[in-house]
Length: 139
Image (cartoon, rainbow, N blue to C red; front, side, top):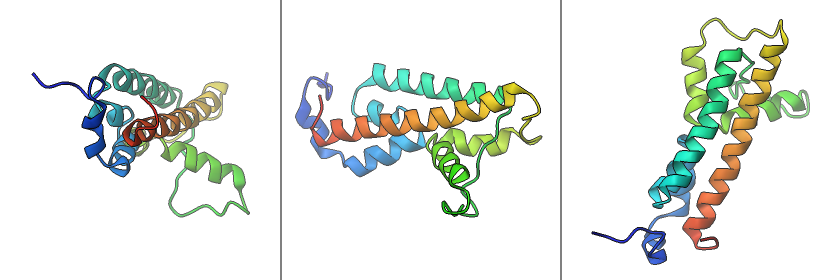
């Protein structure tokens, strides 16, 4: 039976940090799972996925990155688009699953907008964590 990367730090040195970062962005927690940090990766997937699924249920606004938003004209829409895109696969699923669009006529829709952006920002932190592990800066 082979040693995991947690037991053998040199096993993670063969994996590109860029590959880990892209994998961690695309599927939250996947970067950690590739590095052998299964518990952490599954916890991140559950937490970020839970936030994203709750925001789907609350029907918040999912800001679009296309066409590109000019940050000088509408800085909040730009930051919202960056935050939302941080959720990776959940960002793309939002456009497939929610055909009826957002419902911000009630407070729950506004909470859904904030939860989805929070999921994206949390995933950015997970991406940084996975890349630091892959580089060897963090154990």
